[in-house]
Length: 247
Image 1 (cartoon, one colour):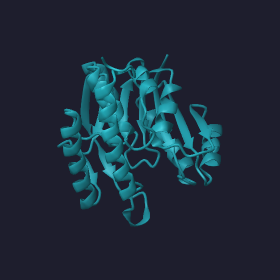
Image 2 (cartoon, rainbow, N blue to C red):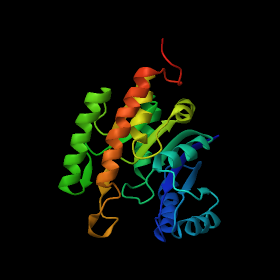
Image 3 (cartoon, one colour):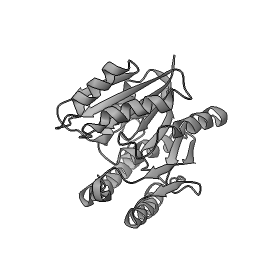
Image 4 (cartoon, one colour):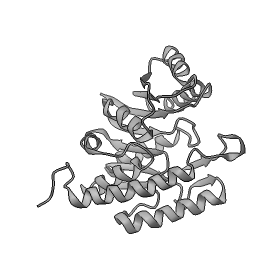
């Protein structure tokens, strides 16, 4: 069995997605001899699909899933993770704002501790984070919001690098409803409700992928995350984990 599958959702990453996929292979092969990368083209309107195809042709450890209409990061990650056939499955943002080599220590932690899920956390005391002060405030505010809403013990639900035991997470993926940025909170909320063990690890983040340090997370995205989080809470409180009404 393949040791590790890394799912990378891609939306309008342009020419750099080829370079980033090859760089991901270069970093992962240093600590894992049996792995696969699945790049999921989430309805990109630029040259992303062609650049992914170029990477697939360059290295047979890279595969692509592609569809025409943009369905959201959550849908793309879920689609890729459901296709995984490995002991562990991770997802990583395709912009490489967070470096792939961090999966080495996350994989080691999962194997040593037996954790079902290991997530990267910008709020870990050992994290090295370079991003605008406003983003730090938003991250902390969202942590407080999630703490109140779901009672999760983790401090950071949204950092774009997470590792899962494949056999544990696939049943969760099949019952999820969220297709966009709130995907992270839903998967962790369901996993927590099932009693899965979740551990946090430090990350290195370089917020410099866009000119002017502009994030893909807009005010509209934040509003959608707040709205979707409330919907997730209602869904989990009214129904059991696998979608059946309580009572």
